[in-house]
Structure formats: C-alpha cells, structure tokens
Length: 293
Image (cartoon, rainbow, N blue to C red; front, side):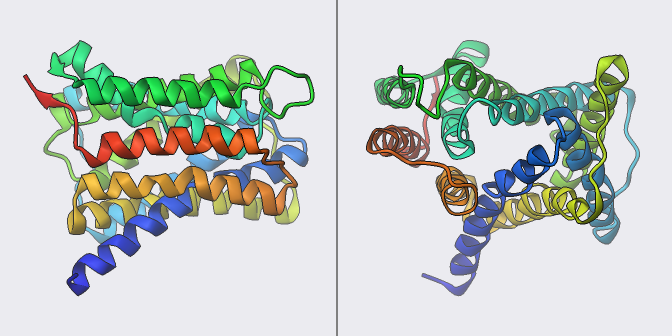
C-alpha cells in the first residue's frame, strides 16, 4: 500500500471517528438542561465561521446564483431536520444505538436512487436491507427496562431517511460544480437559519453556561468541521467507496463513548443488532451498488 493511500485511510478513520463523537458533546449539554433544538443550533451556528475560514483558506468565492440558493437552502433544511431527529432520539435511547440505526442511510440511499432515478437495485441490496431491518428489530426490546424505545427507533430511522435524501440530491441540479467546502458551508448556514426560525416560532434558546461552551465548540469543531475536512481529503485520496466503508467507525465510536463516558449498557442482544446493521451496510458499500439500469 502506498504512503498516500495509508494517509487516506487515516483521514477516513478519523473523519468517521470524529463524527461518532456527537454524543460526547451533546449529552453533557442535555444534562446541563439544554434541549435538543438549542444544542443543535449552537452546533450549526458555531460551525459557520469555522467553515467560512476553510473557504477563505481555499480562496473560494461566496457568491450564489438564485437557482443555487434555492437548492442549497432546501438541502440545508433537510440536513438540519436529519440532525434534529437524531438529537431528539438521544432522549429515548442510548446514543450509540441511535447512531447505529442512523448507519442504515447507505441502504436507504440505494433504495431512493432506485425509486427516484430508476437505478437498478440488485437482490444483494434488498437482502442487506432485510438484514439491517432484522438488526433494528433485534435492538427494539419489548420490556420496559430496555434502553431502546419505538419512538427512539422511529426518530433515528427518520434521521437516516432525511440524510439519505440529502445524499441523493447533493450531487444533482445546480450545485454539482461547487467545491465541497462551499456546499457544506451554505448547507450548514441555511440549516442554522432554519433552526433559528424554529426557535422563534415556539422554542426557547438555552445558552450553555461557563465551561459547557466548550462542549458546543467541540461539537462544531469535531463532528462537523473537522469531520467534513477529513472526509473530503479521504475521498480525494482513496475514493468515496472506501471512505464510506470506514463510516462503520461512526456507530462504533458512538457506542464506545456511551459505554465509557455515560454509563450506557450494551447487552448481548444489542451487540447482535449492531453487528447485523454494520455487516449489512458494509456489504452494500463494498459491493458499490446499485448500478444504472
């Protein structure tokens, strides 16, 4: 393996690992009394200047056409909704398990591509979708002492679905020529504006106190800005398929954070469910499905 590819794999591993740190920064803010909407707003708002600095360093133009503005604003709203659903799911289930269920998004993306853009989905993809569904079912324990609830599962699945919609349309339409940093900057900017509107319509913006600002800054830096930069570098070095495979580090990192820092419990049943989901998604991504009919 060449040195450049080795570095590319490290980029991908750290990108996924940083994204999996979401619970490490979000959950302490929950414990401090902040609600999901406030935690997410500060994550997005603080990411905006970080991504703006990245654009300035790369000498990227900030101007948008009207058609680009409309598409990227819609994508920002979809991305913000996906993030909000994931953060809401933390209130109903362990964060590591929520992140594992979110990890079905590559399969959901393949199915959306089949129905929206008529790309062929092979029997292997449908089989992996069934396998992931079984994994989610295994995670949904029925007894009241479980750390998983149906509401939490539905919120995580909603996050996966909306993120898949984002991935399907991010490379379509008027913005395909844009640098990734520019697209992401405006997605986060419009997402922050949508969250601000939700707060104005009926929410209450809670403000982190004292050193807890560090959690908000960390959330903006590691799972958002740094994860984005490293993901782009990994794709440029080893390609999108291998980078997506390394995305399996995301739920694994989230589970480890939950176990070590927040006392979350991992039963044998949870391990089986997590394994089924990760195996199903990794097979789909590794086989690079679907192909155009």
